[in-house]
Length: 230
Length: 291
Image 1 (cartoon, rainbow over the protein chains, first blue to last red):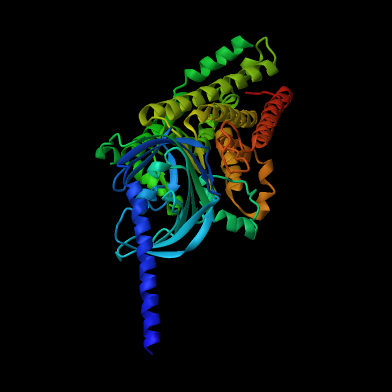
Image 2 (tube, rainbow over the protein chains, first blue to last red):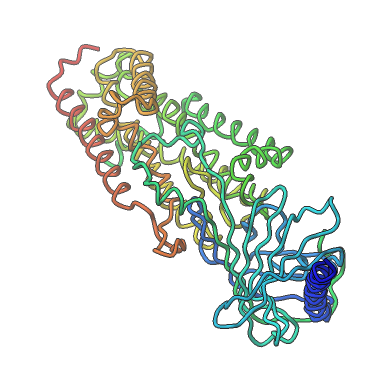
């Protein structure tokens, strides 16, 4: 009986140590991201949503700690996935109120990563769970899957370049689920009926959307006024 | 021929009724612009209701380019009625005043007379469109500014870059001119048969309204008819604002989704113009003019 209790106690303490380890890793990643107080970057944004026809556009991205984010497109109109998703790692790991649990390892883009499940302790949090794929030697998040209460699940995949030491990605691919879009033809005054019914595979593909931003010219910690984000 | 056309133009522009169309267009456009300037955000929210579930749209959607598109959608259905006011009066008006017989006794052929009258009504139609362009496009650009153009179609949305919009409007207005000249030709054709203006004006309006309703109804039995109705082709100006995408779903700047449709519709309208004007000349040359 004593041996049984000993084994159970050992397992509990082992799991706890594992969770602690992951918290430490996430804290280290957060500390790396915290080096950046603000940044400004140029980028090219590509929107791939079945019901949107949009050209690749030049964008300017602004960020300021803790979670101020703004994306401005040349010419004025930008389309981003719903939910205030700021296409930015710093805002996902913005809070310290989380529990980090280990969930194995995986290869992302040829990099060995630790899978960490991030559970917010605050019940009012919009985020239900975030899965981070952390490249431990470089302290970089290679991929993040976030499930929210209101806006479904979205996935971010990041690749890094010259600004990897700040944890700032060179390219972010943002995947999300889309809802159906349909307007009555009476409103759009489209009289012809040339639409062919979609196959099941097309319908499934149409439910997925992607936004891809390739960054260049980061300007880090030069100061951005708060009023800029209003 | 040019002198005859000038005379016809003089006759058109000295009648007060000619200016009704210009005033009506100015009034409608300024009211829409005022409404959108005051409460454009609510209108934009209404438009975005369906897409808002998935995407967040940032930027000035209600800009001069979108407002012009909205106005063309509304007005190009009704401008034919204003065109008919003049075009359908060209021959019947003379008959009504008892001057037609006198006119054809002058030393020029009936064909020359008809062509001069048709060219004059075409000039009036084109001036109406230029007026529409000045108010709907240039004035809106001045009041609301320019930017990317965000368009809602029934099953997708189109985002056009700012530098990819203006040439589309140039094309759309040229196409709209073709559509309105078709209406003028129809009114002109019908005016051959009447001795007062009311009949051909109402008849032209009725044909436009009747065909437009048939074009709008999405009932299978009428779908087969639609390609043969010129009203179906009159709205092909909108094709200028649809863009092609490549395999990676990137919109190709400077492209048109279905250029062949524009060409086909333009040809249908040109055939109608030649048909109506040719028919008018043929019938009028055989007609025994008594008034």
